Image (tube, rainbow, N blue to C red; front, side, top):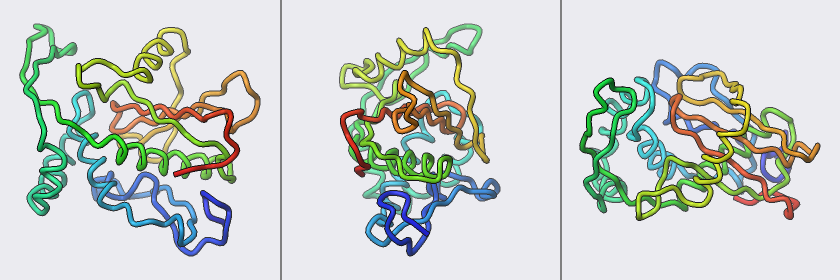
Length: 223
C-alpha cells in the first residue's frame, strides 16, 4: 500500500476529514487513505481547532449546531488553551439573516483565526479526497480559498472574491460523499484535461465551502 502524499510504503491510515468532524452517530463509511509514517503527522489539535471554527460558523445545518453544542463546547471546557486560541481575539458584529422573513439584524461575534492551521487541515483533506477518487497522488501544490472566512475589514479576500465571481457563471456543482450532512466534495474540470489541474470544492455541514486550487507551475504535493 502506498502513501496518499508521497507514494512511499504506507504504515497507517488517515481519516479524511478527521473523525472529530463527525458526530458519533454518523461515523459510518468514513473515508480513509493509506499514509506513511512521515505524512501521518499528529494534527489532531489542528483538526479539532478547524472543526470548531467551521461548526460554529453561520449558515450550516442542524448537524453542525448539534455537534458544536455536544462536542465543540466540551473541547473548550477540556482545553482552555484551545478556547483562547479560538476566541481570544473577538469582535462583536451584526448580520442579516437572509432566510428570515423579517430580515432581522442579529448580533454575533467574529474571531481572529489562525489561517495557517486551517489551510494545513484543508490541504490534507484535499489530497486524501483526490487520492481516494483517482487512486493516485495529486501532483500539485494547493492554494486554499473560501468566501466564508473574512479579512480584518470583514470583507472577502482575493480568493473569496474570485469564488463569488465564479459562482455567478459556473453551473452549480454536483457533490458526492458518503456522509453528505458532514462532508461533500466536487471536482471541477478546468480547460486542462489533466485531472491534476481540477478545482476541488469541499462542503462541510451543507454550508461551509472551501475551494482548492491546484498551482499549475508545480509538479508535486506539498503539505
